[in-house]
Amino acid sequence: MRYLTFALAKGRLAEQTMDLLERIGMPCEEMKEKSRKLIFVNEELGLKIFLAKTSDVPTYVEHGAADIGVVGKDTMMEEDRNIYEMLDLNLGKCKMAVAGLPEMREKMDKCHTLRVATKYPKIATDYFYHQKQQTVEIIKLNGSVELAPIVGLSDVIVDIVESGATLKENGLEVLEEICPLSARVIVNRVSMKMEHERIMSVIDQIRKLIKEEEK
Ligand code: PRP
Image (cartoon, rainbow, N blue to C red; front, side):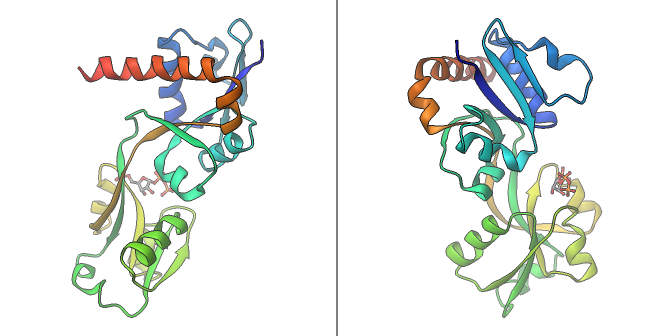
């Protein structure tokens, strides 16, 4: 039997996904041991699971190094890969938003060239250029984006807001909501043809489990 390979985004989402897989009868005991290993196998079920950096998960799936991936909608939007989006797991719910100091609420539409700091240049560009038709300067950062408007690097930020605590504790607020986010199951296009039955069976079982939980 060919291995069915999963790429998971390292961290909490991978743990939650492993829990879902275990509950549909696809456990991977090897993963529960604390180690620095990145790839795990369940020989009996022909299952391979590896942990990748979040933003790389769509790349592994697009190229077929993984058949299935689990990743946030934010990463999918930013990476814009040629893959199937199959299922919303309803995990890791949060939103993409424009945020800044309260006084920017009035000013941001009037700014000649609004400076936008973000880890998500594609999402920010799509939003300002295509949705709002506003000229902006995108400043790419790699983390702690909330710093940018405070130290004068940018006028606003485009970032993920979950509890809102990071914004609040830094005197910032949501100015505009861009879209809701949550974790998605993605599938390689060729795998979908070659391993259709196995892949759909996994997805259907997870879908069922999520539905039961919502009741
Ligand atoms: C994310 C995001 C915000 C924060 C939002 O950052 O970029 O900074 O979480 O969460 P909250 O609304 O619950 O406060 P992350 O923790 O991934 O770190 P980073 O900023 O270094 O990327």
